[in-house]
Image (cartoon, rainbow, N blue to C red):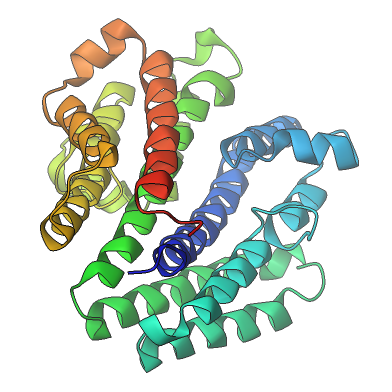
Amino acid sequence: MLGKTASGLYWMFRYLERAENTARLIETGFRIALTRGKGADHEWSSVLQTASANDAYERLYGEPEQARIVDFLLRDPANPSSVLSCIMAARQNARMVRTALTKEVWEAVNETYIMLRKRLARPVPDKDIPEVLDLIRNRCALVQGAMHGTMLRNDMFDFARIGTFLERADSTARILDVKYFVLLPSVNFIGSSLDNVQWETVLRSVAGDRAYSWLNEGEPSPMGIASFLIFDRRMPRSLRFSVSKVRTNMGYLMQQYDVRHQSHDLAEGLFAQLDNGSIELVFEYGLHDFLSGLVNDFAALSKQIETDFRFEA
């Protein structure tokens, strides 16, 4: 496969996953802000930080303000990670690799772009935000469903999956890290009802609240939730699950091309770290240091994939 085709598929599905994750972050911001009242703008700063958009927002707009932050994350052209920017980038990549996509996948992406460009043509009123966030999640899910239902399980499918799950792992790690160090107003709140509400909100942001309750009895705990989102092999947005899918699809590429690259070694190393770890060791080491290290490892793996498979060629 040409490097540009591999790159287009990889980034198309990274951008789609990023758009969905940003929509989930906005919903999380609303839920957490409800528990804070007058201090809600601080929580929106944490949402910006999770989305790696804090510096860009401050340069443009200064102090955090809910309405402006929501608009920045949903539709601001100055934000390359806004939902609309991501959907536009996904469609641009889809056009570049049009012949590598099935008719159903292309139509799903194109219709998503047309629909969201129209819906996000102007700022979204607060009362309409839940409906808009549902629309974003549903449209991204539709594209994923078209991919799973119609695309051959070949190298094109593998690059799409690698992009999806590497972006997902990065997002989950960032959500956990920011929650632990930013969302709490004081260490005095650790273990309080406010702390528990915020941890439950984090679960909702990765669509894991019901799954967690199915698997765990009693009140949710920070350590239990962290373990679930890092190590659970059944949770489709956990770090271990996401990295296992990256590793698996990297393995399929190795078999198909009959060559092992450095990126394969990095993926194997990441999976081994998550497969053999425990939440007790993570908290002993330091959750922030552990998650920051993983985010850096995800970036290194992405860069190595681009090099090994000649994305610029």
